[in-house]
Length: 623
Image 1 (cartoon, rainbow, N blue to C red):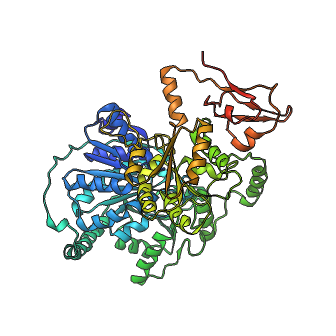
Image 2: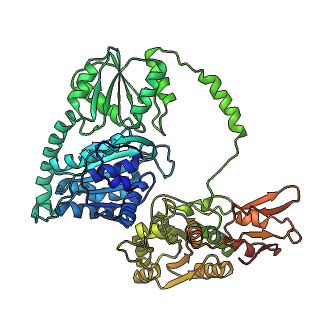
Image 3: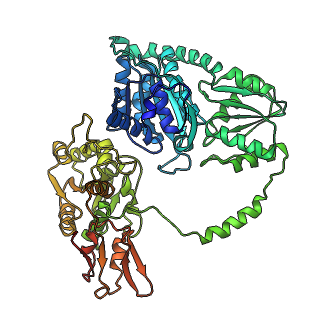
């Protein structure tokens, strides 16, 4: 990791796309970085955190409360004249959209780069929205890398573009770019800028300033469009061929593979700076081929605008893509899908009979063992969900879930979760449900998500006296995205103050507040029973550190993890442990039949000791 800070021009190394973005920012002389962690963007912030905590990078980095605050903080650094970068996953851009759109009007001073990491195929997200639309909607330039080298160079150049047009610049990546390793060549590291702050009343977006600011934005877009026409990242690779392919991002890499596979000699227009659209370049490319295939993931965003450019320039060249259903509008693309599209257009024969391959795959798929995501062994959330089920036995309850590890409460055996919409929506939606339904309404949210977006919804519940129970599952970290600190925890060597959730909740006006450790199962069940009976908004804080974090602490201190065990003499094979608690360390032995504990997987939390009605599970004291 230290190499990211070394000024070794020409050095070649292997970097993950996200880390290459950090190196590009370092080369650009970035001084400020902020993020709210979210896959597939998490490693950008994590790398900055490591550079500060381990290698004393002299810049500033923070894990912000949410994406809007992260962007606002980065904008504040930009207003003070230094270069700043703000990173987030695609849905985080929705949270940051409010300041983003207004920053397009205020303009910037120091270069400001906003990374939005899209997640085609929803590998770790609740949707797969296409954030390229934000570039057009906000009127901001956008760069889109197709490799780790692109990610480095485009990040570095994005700061220059930002300062030339005095606007934020979007850097749009996808999961495959963010998490793929590729060879990169280091460039020189620029000196960081000296902070300064120039007071400008024009930056105050009252209507009298906003109207001329919009006109200025349009002027800046014209300048950015000229930069796009001449950008080194927009490359027209013309060949003696009837077929032309227009593509960008990771789709460019897939396209190269597909063309080689089919032995097709096609012209390619690679758009690394697709917005503002290099209209002249696109028009000339279309004019010099007989037919065009537009290759892109998700929406026909590029295809639609390519068609518009062709129409404006009276070009009748056939344009193929998603509109003819040659390529899908959902999920990630693959070399196979692009090869199929190219084969249909060119008349080439695929080297593989996919019909036979698909038939074999269907047979193989039946043999695969299902491996759904699971809460980790020792996860305190499993104990909390078990306690909720026990506390509400025989009752009809409504449970709103939220974004985080605890979303897995919907899985067997708990089946808890009647909605999962966006960060904080467990509480916000519960506010409305509780006003029209008499059944107990429970909102389940994690500590980081509560700080991110749950607090305003809780205030709403207090203001309108919503009869709901909010259970904050506080594991003292942002676990799902890589154990980044939440506002309620500390990284250890950064300038932070841990916020106490109970004090914050009390400050919001909540009167009924409970605290419990979910590992203390009987106590937690009783507290849940009492909380659900209360009138008005009630908050239960179920706090226990994430099991994975605790395991790391134990290993560092040399503390041995003692697994729980099953006494075969006492086990009656009732399956209560499997059917109602279902820890991943449990194994059902069909020959006995009894439950056994896989000691390698067991975390030694001991919660299962209190689950077994036969007293068959026990835990030996560590020696």
